[in-house]
Structure formats: structure tokens, C-alpha cells
Image (cartoon, rainbow, N blue to C red; front, side):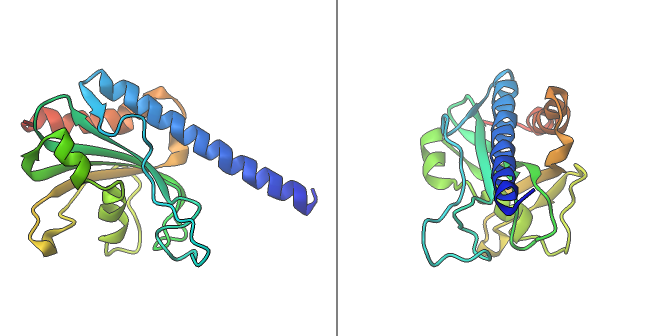
Length: 194
């Protein structure tokens, strides 16, 4: 295989990874909608990208996005809980980590309407809670549920319960149900969401 064929294959592999990641997020949409959890931002995929010519690979915003994300809320007037599901392709703080599927249920200090949430939330919240407030050298990708307060230094009492799996462990619809949806529903069935 010559250099040009290797480059073409690399690009094709990245395109397929993105396409398969979108299919996973669509499946999450479908399964969560059966439980009255709807995408807060409609059909939008969240990410952080940059079109600056001065970007470096160590930045959080690069042309090649670190992640794609969906945000969900219950179909209700007010929301105390917000669900983030993201596919993290890489993170500069963890160069040996492969792509992961991450789920986070954020419990907010006070209820917000959907309109208020759209102004308050950022797609990077889950990425920040997992990869940028973590002080360990490794990320747990075994599905263990971890609790953190990502903004406690600002006296913000928002709590994030999150868990992660390697992307390669998502082979069929049942994986989404068992690794993503069941965990999310656990946080909505054990506590009240107004």
C-alpha cells in the first residue's frame, strides 16, 4: 500500500467512525424518547471546533472535534436534571485513551425551564467534568458510576454522575440499552425531577 492509499484509508476510517458515532447517538435519541427524555437542542450535534490557522493539537478547540454530544431533558416545565451523552474521540490530556462513549446526568442546584437551559448549558460540560476536573492519570472506561461536582470551587453545587465505556464495546442496539439508557433511567427513577 502506498502513502496515498494509506491516507485515503485513514480518512475513510475517520468518516466511518463519525458516521457510526452519529448512529449510536440517534439510537440513544430513539430509546430515550420512549422514556419521555427529549433532545434539548433538537437535531443539533454539539462539539467544540476551531477554524483558526493558529490552532495547535494541544488546544481544546481544533478543526477535528474532540467530541460530539447530545443533551436531553424530560418533557416537563422545569428541569433539575440534564442528561449529556457524548462520543469523545480524543482528549489532549489523555493521549493514549481511545474513543469513548460517555454519559452524564447533571443535577442542577435549582430548576430551569428549557429556554433558560439553552442559554445556560454548554456542550462541553460532560467533557469538562470527566476529562478536565479529573486528577487521576487514567479515565475509568468500565462503566463505573462516578460522582463529581465540577464547579464546586465557584460554590456551584451542580452534581454530575457519569460513566464511560470504550466506543469499540458498542456493537448493537442492546449495548446502548444496557450501557447508556438503563443507567440514565436509574437516576430519574430514584430521585424527583421537576
